[in-house]
Image (cartoon, rainbow over all chains, first blue to last red; front, side, top):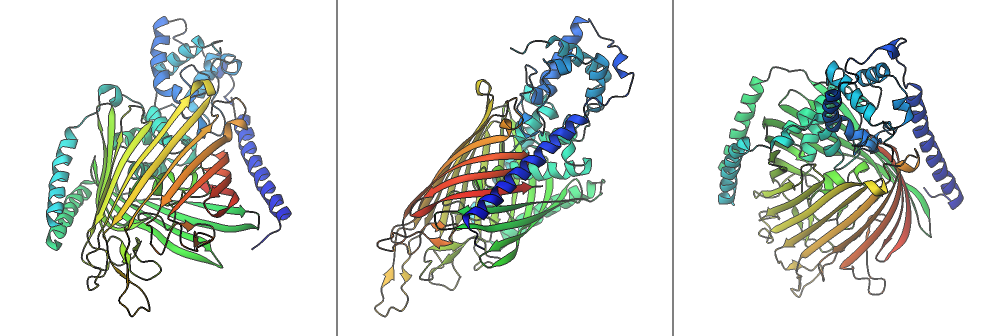
Length: 142
Length: 87
Length: 385
C-alpha cells in the first residue's frame, strides 16, 4: 500500500487536525458543564467561616487530597494534572475566589469530571474547612 | 536445579511470612487514595480521572494494575476507593 | 524435579482454593479493554501507511481472589492480517503480598516489555534495538509463578518469580544460537526459572529500580546433541519521573540494560561434508535510555499536551554469528553493505514530538536514525482503552 508523498502528507495533516478537534471539543463540553449548581446554593453560609482553626484543618486535607491535582500552592499544577482533559482550576484566581462558599461546597461535594465527587470521601465538616483554607490562597498567584 | 527450586520454595514461604510483618512507616500508611493515585499511576502513564470508568470497572483495573505495576495491595485498595468516590 | 514441581503447584492451589472458599462476593465483573494503532512510515524512497493493529484485552474479576486476563491481537503483517493470542493468564490472590499466576503470561523481565514499551506508555512509535521483536528475552512465556508487592518503611518492593517452559534453541544454519522464546509446547523436561525484584526507594514512588534474571539450563530437544546448551539472561532497569516546578514541566527518564549468555556449541554447517562447524562466543547485550519532557503546568490548553522525547539504544550481537540485529520496518537482518555480513553492533537514535489527545490517546511524530538503515519519519496514532 504505497502512497505518493503529497497524499501521505494530506492524510497526516487530516489525522492531526481531527485529533486536535476531538480534544478541543471535550474541553469545551467540560467547561460548559461548569458551575451548574442549583439555584439558591450560592447563599448557603459556611458554618466555619472566620474560625482560624478551621483553615488549619482544611490545609491538612488540602495537602493530602486536593494538592495532587491543584498543586500545593493551589495553582492547578499538581502531579496528576497532566492526564486530565482540562487543567485543574487555579484556586488563587478569580474563578474560584469569585464563587461563594455555597457554590464551592456544592462543587466539592458533587464534582464534575474530571473533578471527583467528595460526598463520601470527606465529611461536610471537612469540606467546609477546606473552603476556609482555599480562601487563604486568594491572590497568592505569584 | 532440584535444589534451587526447593531452596526458592523455602525462601518464598519464609519471606511470605516475614512480609506479613513488614509495615510502612506511619507517614506512608496515612497516605490518601488521591495521593497514591497521583503518585503511582504517573509512574508509567498519566493518571486517569474518576469519570473514565464505572465503579465496577475500577475494581477490575485495580487488580490489573496491582499485577502489572507491582502496586501493593493496601495502595490498590485506597486508589480504587478514591476512584469509586468512596472512603 | 517433577515431584517438587507438583508439590509446589499443589500446595499453592490448596492455599488458593481455601481462600476462594472464604470469598463470598462472587459477582463476576468483566472489562473489555484494548488498544489500536496505525503507523505511517516515510523515508527517502517511500511513504507507507503499512502497519495497523487492534488488540482486545479481556479482564475478568471472578471474585476478590480470582482474576483472569487475556489479550487477543489482530495485526497487519506484510500482505495479510495476523490473528494471535498474546496472553491468557489466571491469577489467584493468595494473600495481601502474594499472587499465584498460571498460564501464558507477560514476564516482568525488565520494565520495558509489558510495561514502559506498551502502547501509550511508550512515547515513541518504535521499539529500541534489541527490545522489540527479535530482541533479547521473551515477550510472553508459558508457566506459573508468584508475584506481589509490599511496603517496608518509606520504601516499597515488588517481585515476580516464575517457572516456565523456557526458550528453544535454534540450530538451523541461518539462526544458529538464536532462540524461539515463545513456543507453545516445550521441547524438553527442563524448565526456565526467572524473576524480577523491583525497588522503589522514595516515599512518593518517583523512582523504580529493577533487577531481573532468567536461567534455562537446557534449551534444545532432549534427544538433540545440543540438549545441554543453557542460557542465562539478566536485565537492570530504572524508571524515574519528576515535576520540575520552575519549568512547569514533568520530566521522565527510564532505561534498561539486558544481557544474554549462551553456552558454547559447535553448530553444524549445512551441506558440509568435511565436518566443519560454526562456533562463536554467543553473548548479546542491549540497552536503551530515554528522556521526555512535557509542560504539564502550562496555562495553554494546547501547549500542555505536547511532549518532547529522546531515546538512544544499542544492540550488540555475537561476532561471527550468522544473524544480527533486526530492522523492524523492513523485517530483515541489518548487514554491512560491503561484506554483506550481519553487523554485530547497531545503534538507534529517535526523537519524538507527541501530542496527547487524552490520557490514553496520543499522536507520535518521530524521526529515527539507525546504523545502516535509512533515516525515517514516523507518524502514529495510538489509542489505549
